[in-house]
Structure formats: C-alpha cells, structure tokens
Image 1 (cartoon, rainbow, N blue to C red):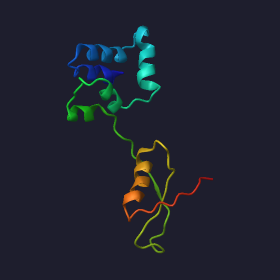
Image 2: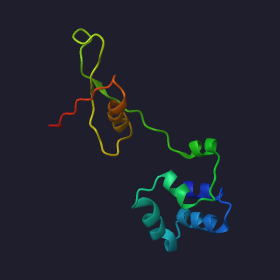
Image 3: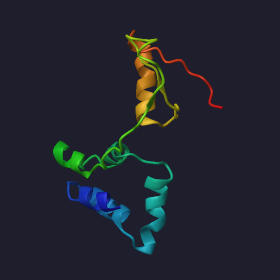
Image 4: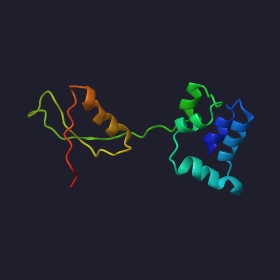
Length: 121
C-alpha cells in the first residue's frame, strides 16, 4: 500500500492520482478495492503502471521502490572428479519461480544448459 501512495505522486492525471491514493488507503471504504485490484490478481508493479498510464516514475526511483530479491541457494550435486567440465544443480522448478524458471528457459536457446527434469519424491 505504501508503494501505491508513492506512485500516486507521479500521476499527472487527477483521476489516476485519486485512484492510486485510494489503493494506498487503509480506510475501510477502500479495503476491498485494494484486495480486488492488487492482491487477488497478484498485480505486479508493471500491471499497476499499465492501469495508470499517467503514472511515470523515474526508473531509478522505481527500482528503489522494489523489494530486494532474496538470495537463492542451490545444491551442486556433481563431483568435479567425475564431471570436471560441468556441474549439476538440484532445484525445484516452480511455475512462478523467478530464478528456476529463468534457468529452465535457458535450455531453449543455450546449448550450454541442459536441464534434466525429474519429479520430486
């Protein structure tokens, strides 16, 4: 909600600014609005900016508003003795996973990544 309040300052259209402040509000009158437009559809910051075309924050400020990504730790599952020029990683591919999805997508255009997907036990 706080991010909506900050983004409202960048809206040049009064209607967009008012709507963005309503999304930021904790007033009971707007509680359902935030849930229906942001939480339930799992709206990203890009979705919000597309909904409010007059909202144009600077790119540097936009990055400052985004939460930092948490580090992702993966297990290397190969021995350098047996595989001296490659390594294998263990991970769970999540449909909405940021890093695992990216690694999986590498296989479609990179000859250097060959994911072997196995079901988890």
